[in-house]
Image (cartoon, rainbow, N blue to C red):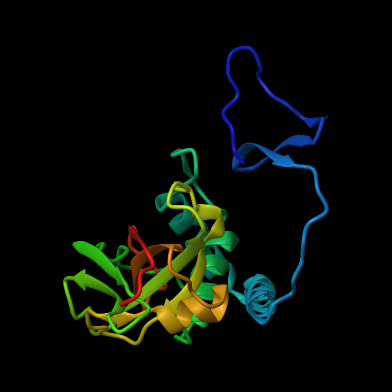
Length: 229
């Protein structure tokens, strides 16, 4: 968890109770002191492999290419969970873009994108019927452009009162290019979260993914309670 130090606390480091205070190049943060759980799923193994591969590949870029990524990262800051703008390192930007491209089985790149991130979806709605009805995502504008995919993250919770799910989101689908509306997400969600049950609340975040640049639009989100007919 990130936090913003105030006038009474200029900086914090070390641990208090079960909380650990520290900072890195992106700012101050606090985390729970705990032994992490590592289920070591296939998805986790693949994610670590991609991260390791492109972190190592950075050293094989030319000096000019690395400088280009450094400049691109400064000009394209990200927004952190506190809403603050922060610039990644060139290496972090290169790794982030290329791990997404690799995850989507698209061609990776050695020079930064020359075009901006794609525009967000205009609308996003869902139906959540695991019976005879539809369990699908509908969006506009559709179909997507020829080089664009839909990048879908989801979370499944037991209570409709749980609204903050960002830490629970998992990538459940990266669609084919030019995806049409009416995307069936039941099987991809159940493959990660297990069988859906009536009363579960499903949260879906969907963004447009440019398969040529590895850039994502700002996501839209939708949620609904699972029903059956």
